[in-house]
Each structure stands twice: as structure tokens, then as C-alpha cells.
Length: 216
Image 1: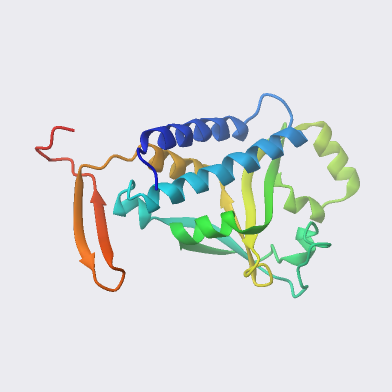
Image 2: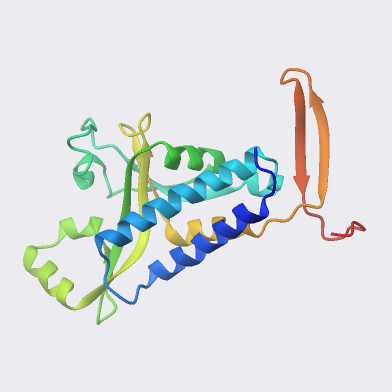
């Protein structure tokens, strides 16, 4: 349980700004950027989970459905020695759009077996494709593209241990930023408590109402 949500939300908004800068970095990506992104995203979902557990987010945010793409496993069993061979393990030709609930998303990230940021490449003519798509072009085309393009953060691939042999999920970085900002800016001015005999505790409904006489 947390005493006050403000410090946690402040950190969440800080991470949101840091992630925003990674969308169009001034310098090319390096290993340190991958590390910092992984830490930031994992910490963000831990914060959101703590805010949910502490009843510091509104029911509207908690019930948020998040847009993702789902890629089916290609039939190859995923393990510790091959999990880096993502293009071989999953089918990217027929992605399926899906809305998943926030708690499921949190669990997938917190228990991720695979976590892999996807960078896009944009050349001088405006042609853009992601790292996953690079396996469909020749080495010569890649060399030209690398020399005349800039890498930008596009999305993140993730899947948990219990889902890795079924699907891998992909979420746009912009979706994550919106989620972090929503949770980081969340305010509550209306709470309802109802005792739950089965849980032997109260179920709490938290809302923010625009028209209220409350002084905060």
C-alpha cells in the first residue's frame, strides 16, 4: 500500500516525457537507450499496479482497454536459447488488432518472457518500415537504408511465459505514453465503499466528477 499517490504519479509523468523524447531522438539509438527504456517501462507498470492496488486511480482508467497487435506463434516452441529469434518464432504477415484490459497488459509486461523494442527506419524520401520488416529486404537494400535513414522508436513486442507459445503482443509507444499520462494526471474526488463479505474487505469505486461541491 502507498501513503500518497502524488510522488508516484510525478515519477510516471517524468517517465512519460522521457519516453516521448525517445520517439524522435536527436542521436542514433545505442544499447544504453534500450536499457533505459526497459527500466522506464517496467517501473511505469509497477507504479500503475501500485496505484490500482492503493485505490488511487479512477474506475475509468482501471477499466481502460488498450489497443495492441497480436502476432501468432509460428509453431516453434519458444525457449531461453531461441527467444531472440523473434521473426522466426511469430507470424508478422497477418497481425490481429485487439483491445486488452489494463490489468492483463500490466501482467504481460511485469512477467514478460520477451521484451523487445521495435525501431523504425525512415529514409530521405519518407519511406518507413520497422526492424521486423527488415528481414524481407536484401542486405544491399538494408545497407543503403541504414546509411540514409534515422532510427525512431516505434513499438514494443512483449509476451509472458504462459503466452509465449501462443502469441506475442505489440503496442505502439504512443499508446503507452497516453496511458502513463492518463494515470499520472488522474485525480479523484468521489469514492464509494461497499463491503464484500467474500473478500472480507471493501470494494471501492473511485471517480472524478467535473461538477462537485467538494473543495479539492
